[in-house]
Length: 336
Ligand code: EPU
Image (tube, rainbow, N blue to C red):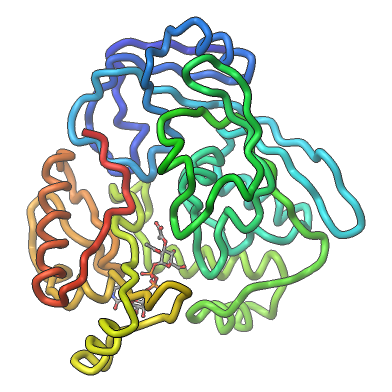
């Protein structure tokens, strides 16, 4: 069923807890509804498509139309002894999907437990944690073109997945609404426990099983990241910067404790560490700050506006640039 609202509050649709309104808010629950809506032109030329609002910062009221998918069916489209291909509606809550796959004994998504948001956005954002990214498991994405409602199927190779990015954030930004995402899950174990202290945590729970890996990831995330139901935030606000090898070597000499990870195109630094070193964990601030256990997470301490958050984030970036000569880029999508 289509739900169509005017002057609609987005407070419950962004995990930052920013109190802004959309001029119009339309929620659809089937692909046919979305197709008819796009063909009719009702949603305008450039609606803003949102998922769970866990990676958005609204700087002010949104004067256009916001579109939201409530497509929530999940079906197996094929399977064999080794694989399950699961087609999932874009409006399905991400963690409910992870829980469902774990309960069915299908391997692949367990490291991505407890990430806020919905399935459609996960495919745009290429959400990742503990050495796994959504794009590693996605085989295909079904989407309708905003301009005329025509359906396109993108295969994984078409999406140009990278660290927290895809073509849906670059070349094809604002052109499609995702309706379904298909994931290739496995029927036998192939855990990835190499990140941080995940392996030790899993061992302490009794060893590597799907349920234990999910539990360990949930525990670690709950310790490090704020509960979106209690503290407004959008998870990691910044991306971890990648710098050239020479720059990393220079920094390592000056700051021996700086965490560094070699990646294909340079060396990845920890934005959380850089921000903490600049003293932001200790800076009392009325409405905006960084989270005490993870400086990468900008939090709304209560009553912050989007402009407050943006001004704070800009000051954080400036300090990291001045101290380390490293540019931080925002992971959060800022909606002006
Ligand atoms: N660190 C600090 N101070 C801090 C935070 C981190 O010194 O305040 C240090 C840690 O001690 C560690 C390193 O920085 O040595 C890395 O920290 P962590 O393992 O917490 O991971 P991260 O790189 O800061 C990334 C993702 C998270 C994801 C974790 C685990 C990004 C932008 N963030 O954080 O993703 O959960 O790895 O895989 O890549 C998200 O995207 O919203 C998110 C939470």
